[in-house]
Image (tube, rainbow, N blue to C red; front, side, top):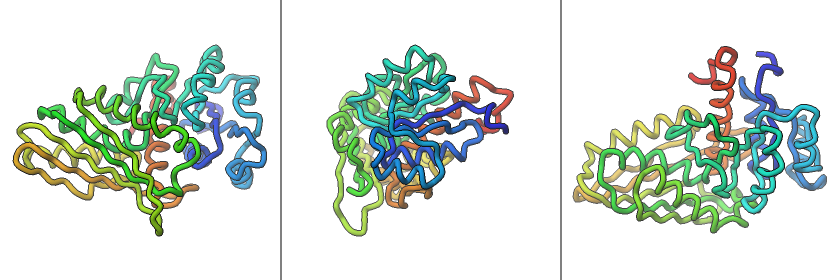
Length: 299
């Protein structure tokens, strides 16, 4: 496929997420990377992107907004507090903004839940790493069982949690809880993020606890397995490590996510799953815009 037939892409932010995201764009059959925009020329991430041969700039958002041809897609890999400004600046250009911060400003998207319904939205929010890992499973169970309470505890290695995430811990919790409520219909939810200093670094894990009615091993396990298989279609390191059901009223599901490589280590599955989900959503937009040119992306 010729590059000019792909959706043109910019990545805003050159931290842990931004550089890996840019490399994933480079491998996509539906997306063409035009620019990685950081805000500091001396930042390690921007230097690493340049060493990898990626097109870079230290002019930040203005560099993306001032291009001769508006970009089709911009991935915002900065912080939740800056996203509103970015959305306002890019709105007149008709650019699709895929937000990897927990800003909760745009339409929340989880690919296996509502990823096919992105037409008409110009600002898509990828919730959080914990949300991407937990929502598909909780929704699958909640669709056929009465669930009273959901608790999601995510554990990520400190080396995989960048400055942007640390600035947005409250937003992370609130946005993850909002997504769980919206996509599952359960009102009583709690989300927790643990940042582990352990050495060797802890692999990204998510523990999901459910309290409800009619929960049995025979009814819950097939739903969890099917939901996990759907996520693995784009995040291959997503694995269910435990699924225990007790007393017809309680279920515990543990998920582990390992990174498949690129510019992040295997333990940083938190970065890999949200980046992979964002790429999936952008590729879906490409299919919807140019179905005869990039149909292979939909498979």
